[in-house]
Amino acid sequence: TLRRAGLAAILEVGNDPAWGPAILVRWPRGTLLAERLAKKSPLGPEKEVLRLAQQIALTLAAAHCQEIYHGTLHPKNVLFPAPEPSQTLQTVGVLLLNFGMAYLEAEHHRLTGVLGALSPSERAYRAPELLRDPNCLSGASDVYSLGGLLGRMLLGTVPPYEPAALQSLRPSVAALVM
Image (cartoon, rainbow, N blue to C red; front, side):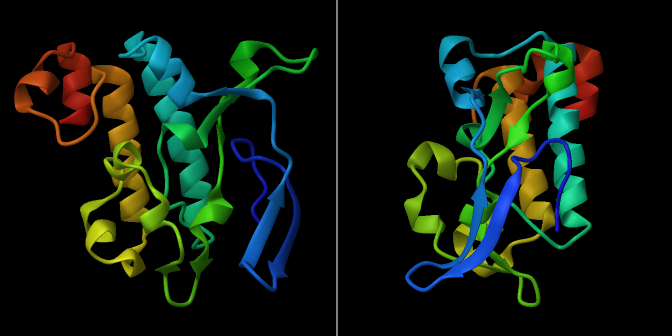
């Protein structure tokens, strides 16, 4: 079972006769990264963007340690939850959503039923190997998607990136992403 900060609370895991494996999660109130980017892109400030990317990376790493891969990481699957009265904005962080949309058959690393459902803007975050073969799901494909999120938050565009765009970042940030 994967339980950690950064993931929506899992209420039940089961197998639906019509849909196959399913994960029921508590859907939190909040704002999607896609909504924030629609209002302000690039997201900035750079330090805050790097902190968000680190939170996402740590959540993915915890999932990857259990051979669970997201496969559909893009701005509509990252949520800034509304803080509870006892929380501050700095303690809430972000949540990754829809791991269940990218079901993994762990022993075969097979992704089922998501490639055709992605919009063109969501496909931009998809690792090239997954566009060629959806069965190539791995931690590396999630890292590629995380790089796309980082670029979108810092540069305001999706992959592929022109070298000139990366050079527009502060040298200290450009060194981290180049």
